[in-house]
Image (cartoon, rainbow, N blue to C red):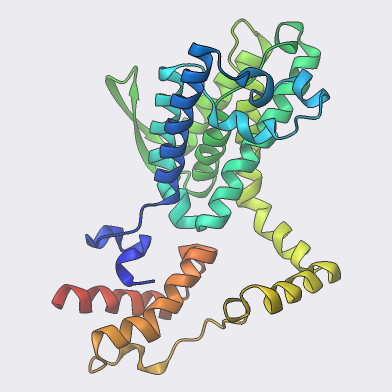
Length: 296
């Protein structure tokens, strides 16, 4: 994979590979069109098989915990979710890496969906209501961002018109208060319990998720599974050691050779573990890469 395909070069103005966040937005949009066609012409029972509902789970349709996250009730619903996903998803994807970002997004949706179903058991008006939307996953991303960067100033548009700037922690607090109010005084079909599940998952994942992952990787059966994957799938990737050649800062090294030997391993590390995993020396090498490419 070349330097131009890497997301970390976005700020330097280089051509980059389309991010997973953008792919998710495209996927949501395409599915919304297909969903609308199916519902309008009644060619497939989308609600029965893909909306999340207590009846569906009772019937064994457990895939609904994933599929409901890509379905939406109307154009405004999907528009709001995709706009928020675009602005917060890119930052979280760059910070966490593609794999952990996707885990956070989908896990927030699953936990949110389960919590909404449980809430429906306690509140009759939600008992037979089907759940759709990426809101739980989006709320998880917003909560994770606020937990990592609580002092970051953000500008929100009230009713898409009035700009209001506030710190990330206050935005999360407002969302939490609205969600709790909706749970205590349920008067609308909004899935507030799913939003709460997303918020909780986002905070827990960025605070303690890495520890959980390290714990499970340390278990004997997990080690055996990893070793088996090394032999069968991608052994050369699994055995990579993130070591930097002393020639990384050698100004006489040809640009293409410099990129191949010194930069590409670092970029693979970013893709796998996020940019926060880099050492100070690796960051200096990336800065040297930017300078080399700007002179080219």
